[in-house]
Image 1: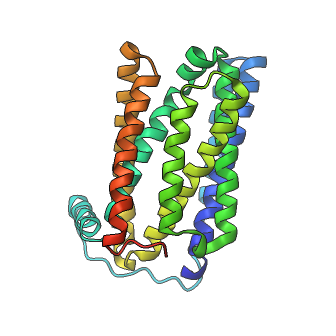
Image 2: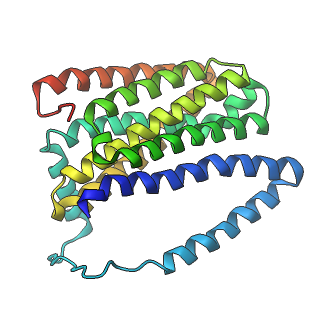
Length: 272
């Protein structure tokens, strides 16, 4: 039901983020005490749980599938693009999502390199940073679940995005594990507030018959941005180190954020 949609999104995200908190901690322990092979085996067995849960999914009682005329996948994608482009709320948020995901997930894939080159700790640094990031994200998701739709506001999403980017800029230059862990927790909290808040705003503002197209299009673009971000940071890190390409990405992200923040007073983007 739409009245509890925002809380449902946040609760779902809390489960995911808790897994991202517990997974690296458990995985790091298994690798350190057993082997990398054992960690991969345990990870593969985890899909049994996923498949079992998937088989238990049921359509809610009384659900009526809407009549949808047969269309091609490309036509649906183009419809999603058109709807996003013409929506004064979703279009700016899309740009923020793309830049934020490119930065956040680009660095996420570079955490092993960061742990090795900056922290000098190997698997201990990787598991600690990822676990703390997941912990912060879990706390944010639980807070959003408690706050419901009122917790998902444009202003909160915008400021959370900025905090997440600035936290990344500080983290990439931090060589102390304890400080890095605290910053990773903050980055996870702010990043999840931005991610789940954006998801809630979009789901609540999109027409029922366009929601699937819009969410599918945004997910596709987000995955593309993630891949590009990881590739660019990794490629330039080979020649210039990890800090410089990450900082360039942060500067670009802050510039996009500033443009969207200034636009909010001249459009339908408000704090509500």
